[in-house]
Image 1: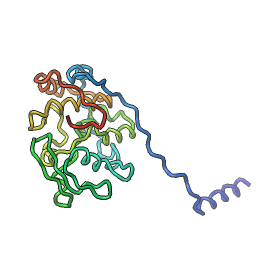
Image 2: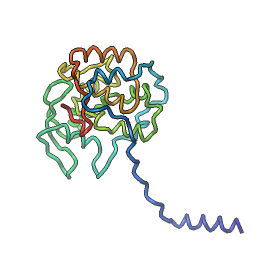
Image 3: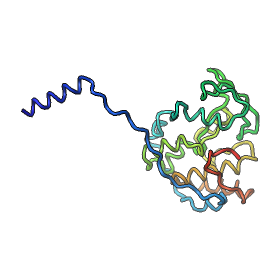
Image 4: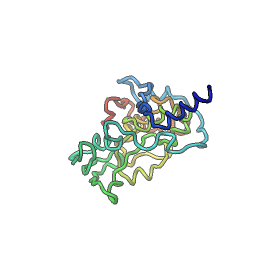
Length: 228
């Protein structure tokens, strides 16, 4: 009798009974610095530890590419936020626009195309491999995916500057545009706080050197996470 029941269940499954569609991953609650705090004061609250091994790191630990919602992926949303004078196709795809690049201070013309799109890239302000080695290994898969697609963590920037930065942290790479460095460091601190990541001593020393020249630098606002 049991065998017959099992066989019947298997037969029904083979007939293609529809399974319920997968549900979207709910937003993960994270820590957000209070508006009005200075980057220096928040920096002092970050734990300082040695860098964990990079063992096990792959980009897919933070999701399989850009997340998509409403038919528009994260890259397009950041381009729409950071570019001006845009032409947009199908309500989502940025076909062209102008970037006032925060990393170099230059104006970069963006034109979508196989040979031209890479002129403007989306940078993870806290490089994902750096995040992996400073606490992200302990996050859930959903938290890591949220981090990789968080507007607070993302900036449209000059492609060559992004490649030069690679997986560098504040101790090994800073934007050549010195007028943006304070905002850049404040944003890194905000991401580290939000996702309970730590910093190395070298990283903290570099951050303090930058912020010593702008002690009143405020933490970035969460809303839209625009560049100030």
